[in-house]
Image (cartoon, rainbow, N blue to C red):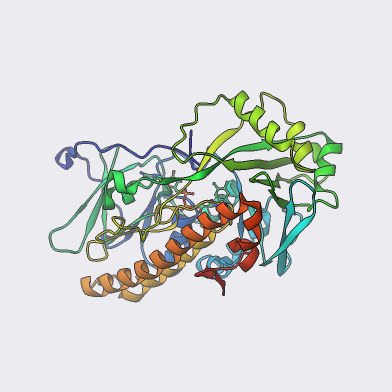
Amino acid sequence: MDSMDESSTSVPPKPFAPAVEATVDVGDPNKIIIIGAGPTGLALAQGLKKASIPYVVYERNENENIKRNWSMGVHWAIPCLKELLPEEVFATIERTQVDPHRSTSDTDRLTLLNGATGELIKSVDSSKFYRLRRDKFRKMLLTGLEIRWGKTLDQITYSDDGLAATTHFADGTRDTGSIIVGTDGPHSRVRTLLVGEEKAKVEPTDFATTMCFTKHTREHALFLRAPPHHPLYQTAAHPMGMFSWLSLHDGEDPDHPEDWTFYHYVSFKEPRDYENKMTNAELVARQKELAKHFVDPWKSVFEWMPDDHPVWYGKLRHWDPRDPGHQWDNQAGRVTIAGDAAHPMTFQRGQGLNHALKDSLELCKAVQKYWNDGAVSVQDRKEALDAYEEEMIQRGGEEVRLSEGNSKTMHNFEKVMESATVKAGMHLTRQGIAS
Ligand SMILES: Cc1cc2nc3c(=O)[nH]c(=O)nc-3n(C[C@H](O)[C@H](O)[C@H](O)COP(=O)(O)OP(=O)(O)OC[C@H]3O[C@@H](n4cnc5c(N)ncnc54)[C@H](O)[C@@H]3O)c2cc1C
């Protein structure tokens, strides 16, 4: 496994034979078809539902359980989420945090330390900051939505009259709507269908890491969250060109620190085309070796990890929708992409989900603009979707490069102060300027 999402492979192209398929068209023929029940697709579905626009969500997984879990900071996109969700669903967001017992203040600070000495490099400012657990957040977003599980998108076809698009699934079924939205993650099948197998591939960067999720004794767990350590999350840049992270992943039971889970990694430079063949034991050993150069809490949290603890390797990858050859024909507004499907990025600036939620809101508004009680005008739809894509591609593409630049500076100690995160905080930036 060499990537940070549920699967590292995109679906290989198969000969397409629609004549033998069973039809399972559901609901309104003008509905919006969403491919992928991740945060982007679900937030969009919630927004469409709120606006009484028919939609259907198809997801390749058989049920709501996710194979890979991590935590994500949502900050500047909180207003987007609030606008998309019913009030009573948004009201439960604090429950989806890694520590559901800590209420979130209106501003926050992310501590960036010198990993070798423990000195403070910068206390990075942020607006309100929810640190969410991916599985609990997804469950919240599923509230009130009906998902068609176990459906893997394979192909898309378009009607000759310019009105409709049809999704064809791997199990031979299909469905027709007025727009197909690919929210199918970093290895998006929809993106592959739009720009071709080669051009759709996520590109490796010069950085990699190994994700570690560990539990500890009561005493050790309390130490990892006690002052001077931040109770939720902290980062460090190391003069040897490494970056480290430690955060709480599961603090559900405040009375039993021995049940808490911590999430930590040390990331490092690695040749772009390096093919990882290390065993789990070797990955653990390397993380432990790297962490020896750090002060606490990193030094200890890695030392305490058992040698055979299951971990996962992750190459940092991305895809810039502005690059030459990455442009696509949206078929008069009948197909588009959003979230990681449109702009997967390196995660150390903590921006992917925030942009994904912004995409969901902008796309929801674009549909509302042309949706005239379901009487679809091809011209209006095309204009609305073109405008959505223009804004999303620029904003998402800029962030892909800012996040890449941020990963570079975080692994180059002399340049840390020039990183987008240090200069602009966690805010939404355009051309590196905080807004
Ligand atoms: C370690 C890590 C830490 C991160 N931290 C942060 C952070 O702090 N802040 C932040 O903003 N972002 C963060 N991110 C990024 C964030 O996790 C992603 O941007 C976000 O989850 C993208 O959501 P998505 O819905 O677009 O994609 P996904 O969550 O990948 O969902 C895609 C869905 O589509 C389904 N699917 C795929 N292919 C098909 C198909 N062919 N047919 C049907 N369904 C399909 C998948 O099964 C999946 O359910 C982090 C990412 C990582 C890896």
